[in-house]
Length: 138
Length: 64
Image 1 (cartoon, helix red, strand yellow):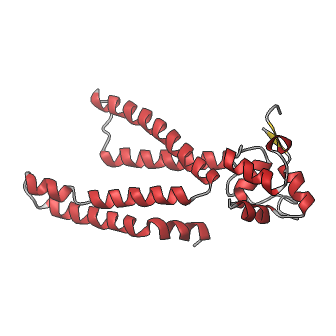
Image 2 (spheres, rainbow over the protein chains, first blue to last red):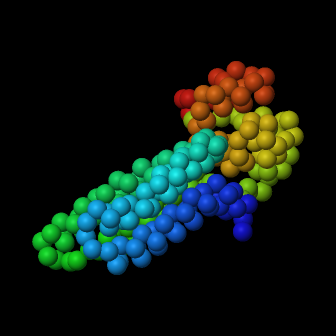
Image 3 (cartoon, each protein chain N blue to C red):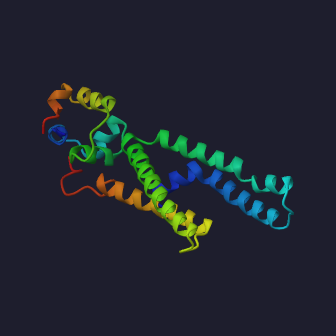
């Protein structure tokens, strides 16, 4: 595991694990429950973990250096705009019966948009590129 | 924005990593500043200027 990845896991690993675990528990519980208040409460089980994860991400972002913060924020902004437009288009196509879009497909699309935006912004700032000859030499 | 960070760093004989350490940023940030891909924030520009004992205008050229 790279140093960057291990730092990321140390920062958000526990809340991410709590999120995955609570989502699995909520999915298993709601599967066997009748519609009503108890089922709604069970479905809301991952909410504290989501808030913990969001807080951990925010704290991680605050500890990053300024270029890294710029990259993260630019990627999130681009991904939000892109995924909003794409999902709106797919929702309209779904509304008129042309295609059927599941929540899972929409979530995957949002993730792909974020990964793509991240890659593009990092490439633009040459972030993570090794130094060229002489750049790192005294 | 054009800047003279690389020339100043090389004059001091520092690597990008050494400069980054003194400025409390990542090496990638120093690299992005030197290649003109990223303009530093005002606090970082002041830190760079103080480190090289120069004014901000002497290091960063907004007209380029």
